[in-house]
Image (cartoon, rainbow, N blue to C red; front, side):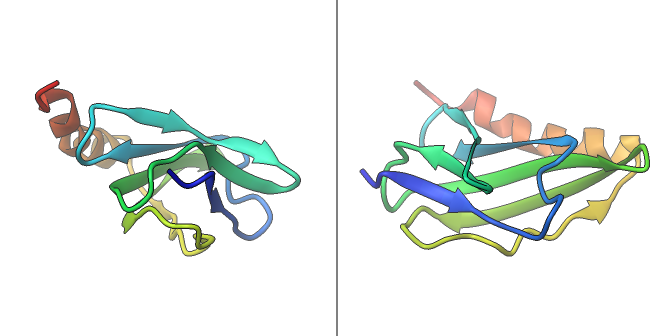
Length: 104
């Protein structure tokens, strides 16, 4: 286990939004915790394939960032938010629904 996975970014990266990590191998979703201006996922297993999903609103428009990485102690700071319509957002969330179908 690594102690934490830290996400950082420019000012406003996580404001007005939500961020989660989804494990490829486990039926688990984890929340992010702000600590000293950084956003940290605590008690993350090392070497696991995960998907970072972040959604935020800017001027009442949704933006989505999805990134697949392997957990490590490195700081992740390259989330790219793209503007999306509500239809695209729903489609992207359905793609992630495969995690609900993993065996326990």
